[in-house]
Length: 181
Image 1 (cartoon, one colour):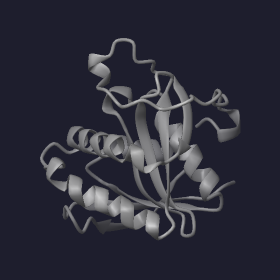
Image 2 (tube, rainbow, N blue to C red):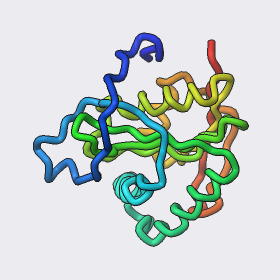
Image 3 (cartoon, helix red, strand yellow):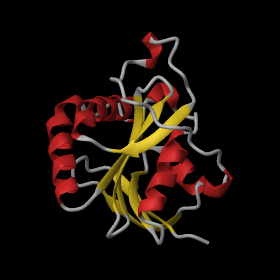
Image 4 (cartoon, one colour):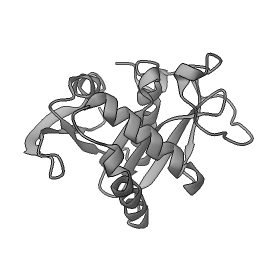
């Protein structure tokens, strides 16, 4: 695990983020993270597309396109209750990931990275942003059928604190927690 303080700093911000396009159709899409910034509602269509694509790749048996309206409503409700979203952009300005966390409780509700950019350090940068918003503790639930995510969280210093079931999908989950130190 690379400690957050040992990761390279983010470079200067872009003037204005541009829309997300599929990395497979964009050979010029830079794979290097440019910056992580606060969410603006103008990002909602991009993060909804990203959420659907990422989850469809992770759990193809579930129709995540049918859950798009739920996701957008869920984001709005979470923000109204004090949650924060950070979005990741690559050098082209494309939104390639996001994290949704409630700083008051430390509950990390959502994290997603465009599938074509998995393994490029974007999830780590988003987790760093979540840690900055909730430095004392982060708790989350991850589907046991998502071994890539489980391995990522364990590498990042999370520990299992329980087991459960996702109320929407009925899939088994693992409750994980991170604390500094």
